[in-house]
Amino acid sequence: MQQSSTPYLELSSSGGLAHVIFDDPARGLNVLSRNVMEALSAVLEELEKEAGAGRINAVLFRSGKEEGFIAGADVGEFALVSRPQEAEAAARQGQDLFNRIAALPVYTLAAIHGVCLGGGTELSLACDGRVASDHESTRIGLPEVQLGILPAWGGTTRLPRLVGLQAALDLLLTGRPASVPKARRMGLVDRVLPHAQFEARSAELAIEAGQGSSLDPGRGGGGLATRLLDGTPPGRALVLRMAKRRVMKETGGHYPAPLKVLEVVRKGLAASIAESLELEAAALGSLLTGTVSRNLQHIFHLRERARKGPWATGGRSGQVSSIGVVGAGVMGGGIAQLAAYGGIPVRMKDIRHEAVLSGLSHARSLFDQAVKRRKLGRREASQRMDLVSGGLTYGGFLQADLVVEAVVERMNVKKAVLAELESHVGDGAVITSNTSSLSIDEMAEAMARPQQFAGMHFFNPVHKMPLVEVVRGQHTHADTVETVAAFSASLGKVPVVTGDGPGFLVNRILGPYLNEAGHMLDEGYDGRAIDGIWKSWGMPMGPYRLIDEVGIDVMHHAGASLHEALGDRLRPSPALVALAESGRLGKKDGRGFYQYEKGRSTGWDATVYEAMGLAASRTPPDADMVADRLSMTMIN
Image 1 (cartoon, rainbow, N blue to C red):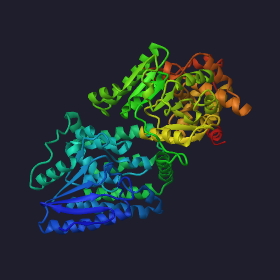
Image 2: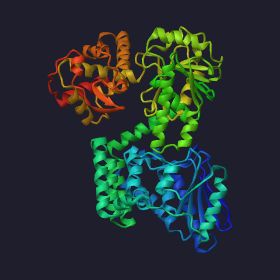
Image 3: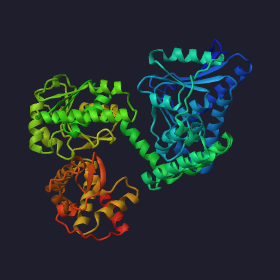
Image 4: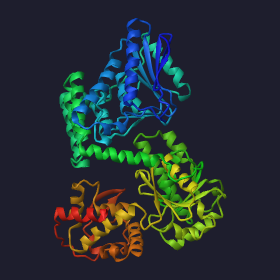
């Protein structure tokens, strides 16, 4: 076979092994656009000829990019599909291509390094085997449900047949990618290879497998319970029934894609692969052009745009190799853990030894959770926790490229801390405040280098909430904005640049909404019922549960700031003011609108009305009234 190439794919062979290398020079990551799929069809035609003539006995699919294998389909092309019939046709075209890979009369191996999502995973499932690099960036998943659709190039059909029903549903219904250890445990990959020798070892294994050697040392198939649940009709029915119950609990039935996944899997497992693929195509036709999917696609594009930058015209981001955190509370410990998870050394500082220990303990508990959920191995978690240190002095802050101030939400305290901090960091260090609502410009008055100061507002819990508000003050330099935003993105967050206005972005929207919920309590309505109505309307939680999550004290400070800036239109609810003065903090101290044990809600706290000075007897609210009042305050 002669070497051939297109702008997207390179095909070559040696020693009976054909190499198919995806490498689109116009993109940082490979995606399966229409042009790439056309090029793949031409490459498969050549492979079919060579395999038929006996000139190759194995095919290795890999990426020419260091960053990843294939990131999936080109989501931007989804907008070109306007009718369900077009979506079905697009699904069948992709299925036909991957069926041709599955039908090649030689061994096919996908070599996965870095990002492997969506259509990239589906291509790998069509191969006879899959190997993965042990690099920590390698992730394999099917995130289509997050776009309101399902994998329709064979993923919904082939994944349960490969890894079993329970493991497949974990990927299909959440959209969360699997780490390499998890992928190996579930049987999604056959071998894990060292990153340093990945390309060479992948080729060696493909050649050996093409000559008849077994790539997979054998899958155990799980324990007896797993075999009974995955391998018998009653067991599968139970798994699907329980999965549907979880989906309905989490989504309220507002998202059709997970329910369609369950339907296709249920029917597909009882049918042939060809029949199951037809079910996939029909399901995609019903989902892709629907309102829910279109809205989720829009959110996807907004999120990706926010992650990529540039964030400030003319700005250049500086390198952040180590950071400091001043204020070692829950937020400080969470920020430190997030940075250490990303391999960044962190030094925490507080004025109390107990606070430092608390911050370190919180960070360690988050790493322990990651181990428990099998996101990290015990050794990896320990190594990353070793990156976090703390003390009562500014020792180590001189080496920090960026510092996050996360002390109490009081302007006089923050200004004093920032003025002191500035004298303990390098001249080029960027200093940020994690304030949720206080003025960045007013804080900057205490600083000698206000051009190197910005807001960097993380949300609680830091390790879960994706957004970071990057607040640009009047004197903040474009380089500072770029540095803070780029660092946020490197931690896996979505940076949103805002001006220094009341409440910035999120609290400017949430503040009026939560305050309106407080006024409804003042008017005598049942808070627990309001939370239930709002959740049934499609929100992840009600306003009072959200106040508990944010922190009653934080909510109170943000509300006072908005009232001061915007006047009586945001006059604080007397009930919420009284609740803040009662000393309750919400989830972090176990008592708010709800009661909590070990971070989990144990139910509505009936004594909360007494804490707010309200009567315990409550009026049942009208559902439409609740939806209108809460939603309109956010819009207006």
